Image 1 (spheres, rainbow over the protein chains, first blue to last red):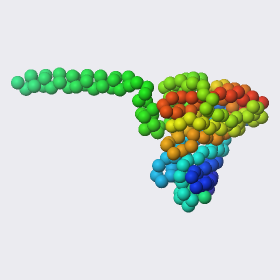
Image 2: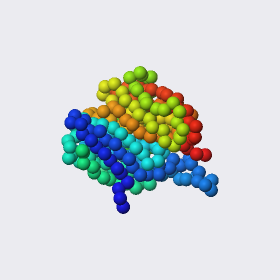
Image 3: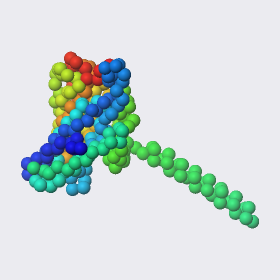
Image 4: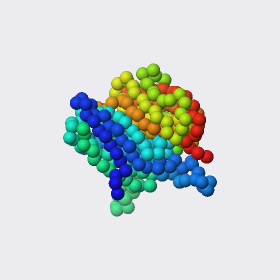
Length: 103
Length: 164
């Protein structure tokens, strides 16, 4: 299966800007389907970005984050060609991980 | 003789247990000043904070303190969101030593939407997309130097994002 995570990390020399887009339903558990039944909660709880084995950014998410979530941040350092590791885990225990080369 | 020995060690054990309990109670009473270091070492998902209905309870559960309004916290959110399912909100701050940034929506069924940990070396600036059930205040909380600062903005929603 193709990765659910799309990451773009761009170094400007001093800082690295990271944009991530993840495919996930992010069901909050408050929305009803067409039959009027509640769709059970299914959302990413934690998303981490690691550079050089250290976390540079951690997101704790609830069901209030939009479907197919997007997040953008930046950190100091990060060399072109180096790898950034991204992984998430959802409330059902599903996970996905990918690595992106800093451009 | 053996009996006496057993009696003695049992008493000793009791005393030790008592001491342990006192030590634990002592830990619980640590002043708030020490709490951030404790929280930073703890990477666990804040399950309880994501169950709170009001933004005040969520902030309390997450940080154990209250936030003061600061104009150094700059939030960018639309005046009117046509689609409450996808509301782009970003925040940036000139505050130093930022350790965490959280997004809350007062009128959502669960107020806390997202909480980001900002390690040293990461910029205190985050952009994301959130869901809004209806017109509501959006609150951003920034933890900097162990204190909480916030900014609030009302976003009008024409179509809700939380169904119902």
